[in-house]
Structure formats: C-alpha cells, structure tokens
Image 1: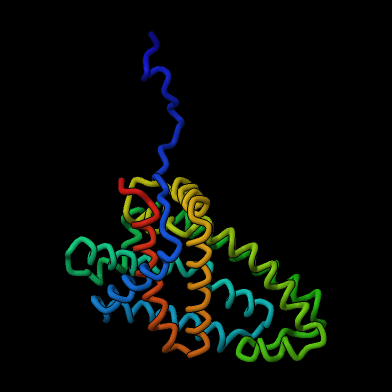
Image 2: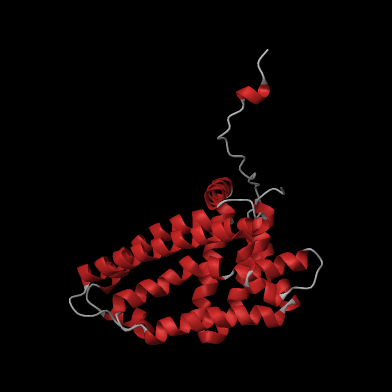
Length: 260
C-alpha cells in the first residue's frame, strides 16, 4: 500500500478556487463599492484625488505626444496597484470595523514581497507598452503626435487618423487583455492572504477570468467607461468615480474567489 505522503507532489500549488458569478454581477459590485465610498468618504476622496491628480498631470503636461498617449492609456494598467488602500478600506468595512486611513496607506506592507514583485511586472509592462506606442505612432505620423488634451479631435482630423486609431486600439487591446487577466483579482488576493505569492495570484486571476468570461468582459467595459467618463468630466469626475471602482474591485474578488 502506497504512502499518500510519499505520493504527494511537493511542488504542487494549491490555487484558490475560482467561483462563477451571475452575468450582471458587476453592477452589484459597483453598488457595494458606492456604499463603501459613502461609508468612508474622506479616505475614498483622498485616493480618488490622488488618482485624479495623476490623470490630470498626464493630460496637462504630456509634452511628447507618443509617450503622453502611452502614459494616458497606461493609466489603466497601473490603476489597480494604486488602489490597494481602497481594498484595505473595503476589507475593514466588511469586517465590521472602522476603516483606518493611516493603515490603508501602507496596506501593501502586509505582503511586501509579492506586492513589490507584482509592481515590478506592471512597471515592465508599462515600459513595453510605451515602446509599442512610440512605434505605432511613428508608423502613422511624420511629425509630433497631437497633444493629449486635444488628442481625439486632432487624430480624427488627420488623413490617416481613423486607421491609426484602429491600429492603436488593437495594440492597446492586447495589452489590456493581458494586464486585466493577470490583475482582475490579484491585488485584493495578495492583500487578503499575506502568504500568497504574486505568481499564484496571477494564475488565480487568469483562472477566474476563464470561468467568468461574460461577467468580467462586462466588468472591464464598465471600468473603461467610468474611467473615460472621469477624464471627460475632468479631475472631479475621476476623484468621484475611481474610488467606487476600487472598492467594487474588492467585492468582485470576494465573489470570484472562494474563501480560504
């Protein structure tokens, strides 16, 4: 009779279990995210203000058109990492406690190694995306890119503007799918389970996406829509909408990943 302990694979990873959700679940995440923002308005507005200031600075001071456009679209790539404090606030509200703003500022320290590694991955992807953006722009524009503040108007007015927009969106879509699949639940998972490593969180996130393609496609569309609406309405829109998305991401994680 074989020994179960001898047969066990010492290198086998026990990934958190992905759960299927209803097709319209993202609207419930947003509703609960909005409730969390109301429960901790000052802290939520602080994080929203920081993210909004970053977005405004990208639009206002992007001198090089190609790099400015890459940073503007790359805003969505690094946004989940910047919202870690919002996840911590939602966790505290969920547990019935009072959100600790100062603790939320350093929530990443609860799993420092994994958060650092994940941040390095996002930084690498952003650097690659900037390079791809510069190449795509160089293929269509002889001179400098239009300024980010008048980007859409100037691109559509250019002779090959529509073709460029299609090519740029196609390239950006590939990066967006990669980053979204790797991060849809990764950061809340790393915060919730300090012993979880970054690669386990990324694989879990991809498994979650594979099990919930429809709902998470809707979730991604809502994030893009709300972010675009925030940019369209200026810093105030970003400051109000991005905290709701951050809080909602925590509730998405809670429904998409089985409890430990």
